[in-house]
Image (cartoon, rainbow over all chains, first blue to last red; front, side, top):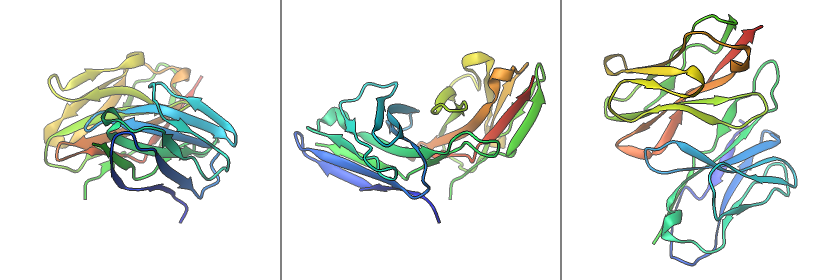
Length: 115
Length: 114
């Protein structure tokens, strides 16, 4: 079954380390997104991509970077992790708007803790 | 397992009609509740949220939602819809016991006839 996969599910890492959060989808969706969510709070869009080699910053400023070299892969990288980066990161993809469906599919999230 | 149910998959209304989109969740503890909207070709945006206090929450663009704890519901309403409200609407819940996890409903597609 087509889906969207995020790894790792949980990550605890020391300050100053470089980390990459992986996100892959098997649905052939052009649009992909990264959201940041603090516990109990709403989502904040930090990055999005409308296709290969397309990346844009979202509504919430983030020190992370993203890349989109392949349609199915949209990794997020923190060059030097800090405790303020502790949060949950959700990846999503969406289909083009059509008459039948333009919904989102979300990954299960990566819970990042920087100590 | 906790879940969020949106009863209507697709709703079609004429302009100026009143809107109510249903949302029910299955969790007996403390929750935070959200409605998100995705306009065609755009990313997900927050319409409104409920954390505590007045159960009637007002959001952007004339939307409001009422939290009825006894019914486990958080229905979205708008008195008079416009063609520009055509979009997909998602209800979402986070639970106090697992606040890092956000659960989304399957979405309701709203089509407004001009």
